[in-house]
Each structure stands twice: as structure tokens, then as C-alpha cells.
Length: 55
Image 1 (spheres, rainbow, N blue to C red):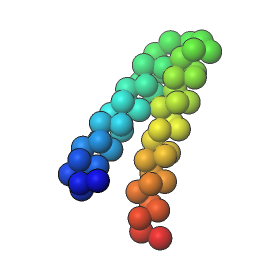
Image 2: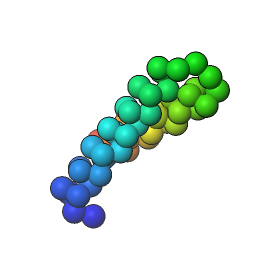
Image 3: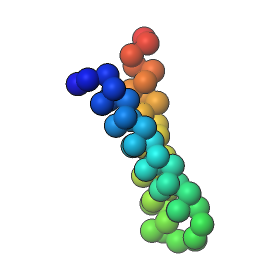
Image 4: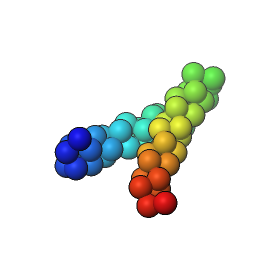
């Protein structure tokens, strides 16, 4: 995959994950908690992929 395409894709996924966490934080409920957890899992997956390159 092209380096620029991969970077743009990671930025897009990061923005979506942050949006999920913010949207889930505004309201109380199981559905919104799951949104937060999905967003957090996405952010952690991005961090894992980034750190794996430098090991």
C-alpha cells in the first residue's frame, strides 16, 4: 500500500474512533458505552500498528 494512502487511512480511522468516544461520552447507556469501547479498541489498534513498525 502506498505510504500516503496508508497515512490518510489511519488519520480517517483515528478521527472516526475519536468521534465514537466523544459521541458515546455524551449520553448514559449500554449502547453508548459500547460505542466508547469500539472507539477505544480502534485507537489501541492504531497504536499497536504504529508501535509494531519500530520493534
